[in-house]
Image 1 (cartoon, each protein chain N blue to C red):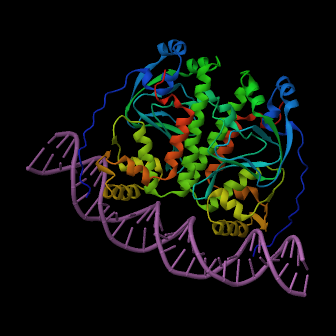
Image 2 (image 1 turned 90 degrees about the vertical axis):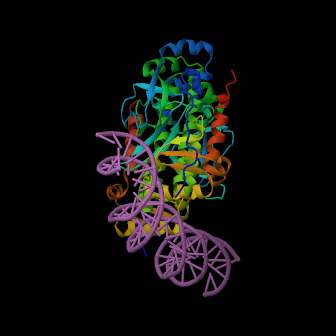
Length: 250
Length: 250
DNA sequence: TTAACTCTGTGCGTCAGCGCACATATAGCT
DNA sequence: AGCTATATGTGCGCTGACGCACAGAGTTAA
């Protein structure tokens, strides 16, 4: 029923370490130490960076991809715990000391990232300089997002959650176009695919999104924010507070 | 309908810093630096340690109380994000760098705790010694618990969640007796009080718990674990892995 | 063109949890 | 002993989400 509007895409790939906000926030001194060890890697949709329990070999700094931290239950159903884009990094467990997590890291939106060998990361981290403090702040932002996910799962409708999810994704992309099937969104939200179909249909009727076979275009972001629960705004505000380095100020 | 069985209580108060597992895990050197600054404080039921957004003045190391990290929504409903007892500390935001969180810290089970002035905590933390690494590991355990809360909220029934919640509380107490109304549990789980009543009634019928007016006694812990979802076991296993110091090994 | 496949739409019946209303039961107080 | 607070039990209608089944619609490949 929903007609697809202009589903053009494009968006230049982001192939500079500085496109990741955490890397960008580091002083030149640290950058010079670290950047030579960064390795640019492709991040195709669906790629699994690590499984629950895996010892992490690398940390990943996304530039233009999005990674979901997904918990997969014993019976196979799943739920997204948090999402990471160019504002963050994947693999906090490495410097937290646990080396592994109970979640899976999986690419939700294709693009690329810079990866760094775990030991290098730990070496720099253990110099106890700015990297440590930056990582800790980022970790707190991540914690906030997880907490809010828990709240949202408890109290809000699929439509509200979909709005939140779209906004979180949108913030991590360069344009308003998402490559993502309703089936995948359902896996992320931990709900039925049909539920997403219905919610998406309603959002389309309200003139907020267009979509068609694995492509979603947000046409009215403001309205999307209105329809979302408070959860998006809370996470956004807290992330901005903890990591004001967002706006490339150096 | 449910007859109350033997609802005796008692359990000696725990008035030694070492009763908190994190404090206990520290070397004597660090303990000697830190312990003089610890202040024993009463933790009555319902006491609010901090509100969302408050700048934290102290970190709290529970000895025999339980503190809930609770998110309170704009409309007043709430959801517990995680729970802290003698295995942990309240106030990670202080050393993570954010100074405040979006959640509220509230005493869920009365007892006492040692508190430490934020600055003292940060001073020791910034010596970049064992305290730092211990705190990071604990933070990861906390993250795991939050993530699992999100999953549980999404997929499991009130009864399963109640089982998980009882087990988490039980692990942080010295006996199998809880002082807690169904109303309060409902606030923690973010569900209706009636829902808790029904679930508790079923658990009683199954011979797992006895309860009466604000008192709950677990009579069959093994069965409780069987009835719980996987979430409890996952958090337990991961916490034990990250903080094996549980069993006073020093 | 046809066929196979994937993605989306829709219509069931079912059920857990909700909101509300109100009936008990128990503890604590005077 | 009686009163009042608080805690718990129960019923009822409602709704959002579920599981299932299948129908269309678009895309790809032969």
